[in-house]
Image 1: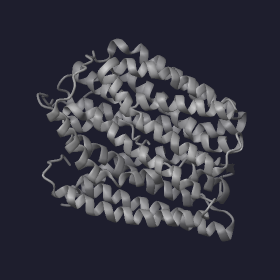
Image 2 (image 1 turned 60 degrees about the vertical axis):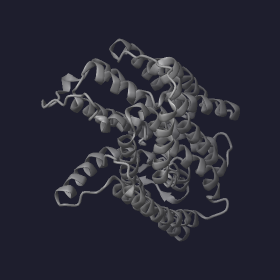
Image 3 (image 1 turned 90 degrees about the vertical axis):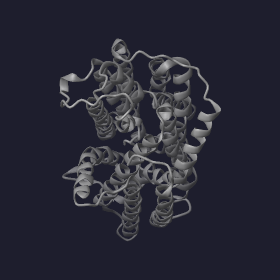
Length: 451
């Protein structure tokens, strides 16, 4: 989600050829992972479950309990996402120059927990305070967990790059298991016990995540905080790299704009226009967000195998080719949503399989764009800029959320659902075509990037 989250879980996987490391020919054993890994693994699973569980409930909570219009709720979610994904710049800076990764994570977990507690108090001022605390906690923590994990492997298991790569794959798995579990369960809890009780679960999960992570301190890497300033040559290198990556990634926020509408316009559409009966059960409309992390767990390994099969057949896709496929899949996802919306105008309700199909397509697009794009960026970055490039990539998500603060209010306020999704599809066709041209220019550049 995973965004993939785009959390920076895949960051160090592509960094396995660092100078001076010796590759081991032995296959890594499950029991060879350092003890610190398991504290990070379970802590991250709980933290991601807390975050995505809270976010799953947010749109309908604002509409049903706090009196927000759908347009205003979507705007608030957009600004919240923008803050979450722009604050990693602050998190990386504080960790690199002042506190270290461990202390930064622990310190900003405290406002994170407080935000999870406050969000369930049915008051607009409390909501805004809670979202500010949640954005600060999640955003500042985000760029530090996976680098701390990578450092732990470098110190505790030097040279075992296969083991470290396996750890990051398991870490990404934990993120999506936590997300899938909470997005599936919390709408059910909300329906039975109300929002106040449902929001307590993320607070408890976040407290558990902090406690478990803090207990593991003796088993993590020893950090040395450096306040060295970049030389003029390093600054020139940074700006050159950013210019090259921005020339390629300038279209990526449009993908995130579509992807990040899952808790807003997609949820509102499900509530109003989908037949949510399934095998005798009434599915909560926000529970459909569970499909994204669930599909990730299936599609991520499946598509990795698919790329290898294509390579053996002589079709060795470049990273930019995979990303272009992702943009095409994004177009198809909003086309499916548009068709479903137009059918609903005449039928009243349509099968939820329409939106499930859109979730499948947008999740496949996420694998192609988020995972591949992050790896591409880190292959291009020198070792001294890995954290900086993590924050730069996450800023693309922030721009997508910021774009949504202007786009999502059009839903039902200015445009019918069908016209809204059709317009989104038309825009994404233009974006995909522009990306194809930018990718061609990027591949002709003199920069040697690892594919």
